[in-house]
Length: 576
Image (cartoon, rainbow, N blue to C red; front, side, top):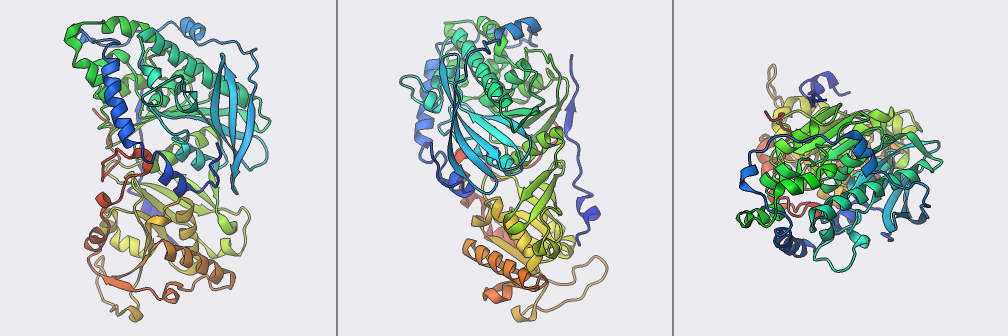
């Protein structure tokens, strides 16, 4: 068994607390969705942003005299309630069409009416009995793919959450007329129009809530909201406007329109600042017009728990604007990464789902293929670590021969927004080589052993996260058949080199299938790797070995983050 007290002792940390200041996609294979999302959109997005910078430059130009402006004037709560009110008596005319399903959930296309406009959404409904918790997930600005928030939706739905992903106004199929890029008309407009677009987006989300509240299998007391970037701002506003939401998670989002217009390095914002000396418009007037859609200006009328996930290197929402938004909430935690606006997707999936699961009072439990079920405990991020660690314990749900053959494990998912390989290592070797293994650019699965039962567990989990196509390295103690020689040592010194077997994606599938067969045959402790006839290496310099073989810069970013050039992302200390 794994020595968890030793393993997790250095992994516990506390997120920063900020006190209050008073269409048919066919199959649902994860890798296929990631590999096809946003493919070929790079040049269009870049040219669109450049043109938007020119167009937005005539909207409002910041006056140099306002560069030192401080603070955000709070809006009266009554004005907030009035501004975001809408006619709930209007029929939703909701329609759902089943698009695809898997062993965990059914995915529907939902359409509903919101103030005279049709909203398109994807709805993930878990295949569980009883009332389930639910989350609304909102994509970012200029999104060209209706599945941009799919990473979180699929992740949460597999763990028993219903998830609704509506498209924002002027995005995707909601485009009106000609746009250079999806969502252009949402922000490229006079301030009063931008303000009304934000209001429409919030009303759309509140209408989505109306629909969710009508579902027999959705628990109305466990409905939450999350969003990224522009979607994060809209979700903040919706959270503050609607008390039915029981909490929110806001990803790479901030607030303070005046401050963003003055300081943000977003190409769209930066371009119009280049013309600031012309004085075509006044940023003060624009900020006052936009106050009702500035999350920092809205009071936290109905305080509920909030989590914010942000990057210390983000130039779209700089640290000051993030903290400005955070201080407007009564109950907020922040988790920082040393990242740009491209926060680590792998970490955010776990953190978002874990946060809402804790609010919902339900454990994270994932059904694996072939009858296995695993309970996940997400550990607090540790500043400086390049992974997020998850404690894995096989639950008694559906216990069978495979369950009894497997034990627990610990998984550290690599934060970089590229699908790097995974290293499977037995606990005893992890304790010896931990320092070296922590420095390599890979995810790590610490198993009780690499016998067929534990290997089946590890490979099942890796496959379900859709990381097996990056390959798996399996570490073991020396074996004479590989020409490895047992060494001796004293105290904490290394007593042997390690044996490393590389499994390419095809070999991962073969090893996984063979491991399951061995378990069913009562050979749960057998070593299946020699049966595959694969070469293995005897390694003394673990760090050098993996650094020679894993070149993060050669691995392309996941398609939904094609502009993320980071090759090393770590958790960060809270900014001063």
